[in-house]
Length: 228
Image 1 (cartoon, helix red, strand yellow):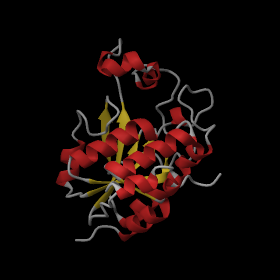
Image 2 (image 1 turned 60 degrees about the horizontal axis):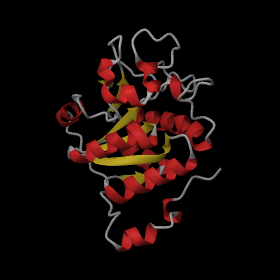
Image 3 (image 1 turned 30 degrees about the horizontal axis):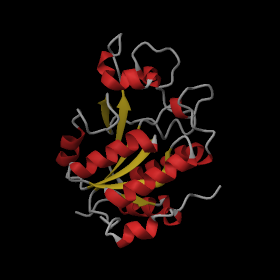
């Protein structure tokens, strides 16, 4: 299945004519941010499995190629991972009442859904030199030290990928912009449960607070490394 085109959205021209969708452009010091990349989203039988959607299934392959590019040029690789440790999921707050699927990240869950995906396990496992941020909310920024850690690295651009597009990817991209970073959301490296949800959320992010870019563009920029 061909990748969804944002230009094909029926309101694309109207948004552009109104002044939405201006390009942020790439900065000089990017970091690659991978959000919730774990077996839960690509394991048969998981309540979060999105591999029935071709774009969702292929997104893990795209993420692995971004990691290869980032590591080759020395661009920082940052992982945002969910973790809950309260036995009654009180640290899951309101979301624990709304979406029971977050039990996959509760300490003691025996399903192993929080493990790295079976696809590209070596590439999609954090290295000791990477930055790993544990979160309890959809956004990788909310209630974490991520913004501070990126600032200490003098990062100005956050290359965003992961799952799911409509949830944690979207929330993280919005908070990246609110924190003063340029969010570059990589279209092929984000996954969701249906092509429609994927397209609508990518379109809305691209019009309002992020640049949605192709994997080809992201790999090219990551390979360039940092401009000192």
